[in-house]
Structures are given as structure tokens and as C-alpha cells.
Amino acid sequence: SKRLVYDPAKGALDYENYVGRSDTFNYQQIFGHIYNQLASTSIPLDSLRYDSYNGKSESITYRSFVEGFPIFNDDGYGTVQIQNNHDGAERYHFSTYSLQVPVPVSNKKTVLPSSAVVFNGLRSVNKLKEVTGIRIGYQWKTDQNAKTVTLTPTYYIRYRNSWENYKSLINN
Image (cartoon, rainbow, N blue to C red; front, side):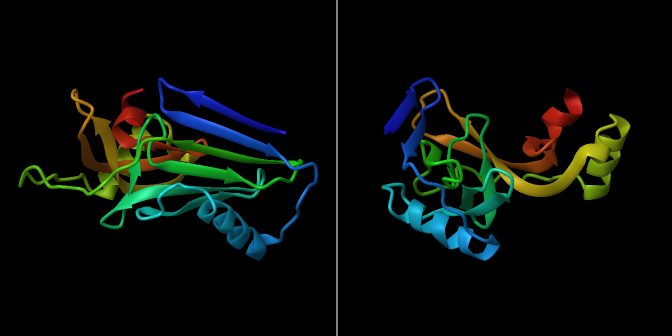
């Protein structure tokens, strides 16, 4: 009644536990219930924080944060998603990769454009209507030697229900 799928190319784990019953929680209860499920796993909670809630699937996403800013990666590194068993199965999706202690590698400053520039850029490519959120976060890029990663500050746009890198969204 349990299934674990590992994707070695992305380092992603999908775990399903078929419990044979459906649990229903109200909006206030679901957060505590899913956090208790997260705490019962062996996933390190040091840098994880609540990121989002999807009421339709009854799932909560936790994301790694550094210095108060979320970290985003195309492969989902540093992200944990737990879905309540409203259909008889608990589902966990997470990566085997997580960050350790961040170490500054240079004193180079990053200057981000103003939010007005970001909104005008989205308007110019006709994507502003489908935007439901904007935030500053770090983009996680793995270096060639795969032992260190680079975190680059940038804007992330909530577009069509997922967080997209501002530059990628504008250029595509």
C-alpha cells in the first residue's frame, strides 16, 4: 500500500501511502496536520518555510529560504510538497538535494530592476493578465563541479499557477 518513485536525473522522490481512508480538515486544521506529517519525515527543517497552499488539491508547499528570501530551482531542489489524503492516499514530493550553510563567494552586488520595469515588461509581452503574484527570490544554479551552487537574486512571477523566473517569462 506504499509506493516510492525515485528519479535519479532530478534527484526527486515521490512517495505515496495508501491509507484506505479519506481525512477531511477545515482550513485551520490542514496546516497543522500537514506540518506534523512533514516533521515526522527525515527531511531537514532548518531552512524550510511555508510557501503556498493549494485548496483544490489540499497540498502545502514548503520551500528553502536564505536570508528571508525563497529559493527556486527548475528541478524543484529545496522544495517539499505534501498532499493530504482526501482520496485515500498521502502524497509527498521532494528532492534529495538541499542547501547547507550559505557562504558568500564575492562582494559583487546585484541590482534588480524596479517593480514598475517588471510590470511594464510583462505588459509588453501580454502576460500581465495571468500574473497573480510577484516576489524576489534566489535562483539556484548548480555549478559544474556539483559541490557548490550559486544563488542569484531575481524576480519570480506567479504565472499560470507556478512561480516563473521573470527573465525566462519575458524572453519566452
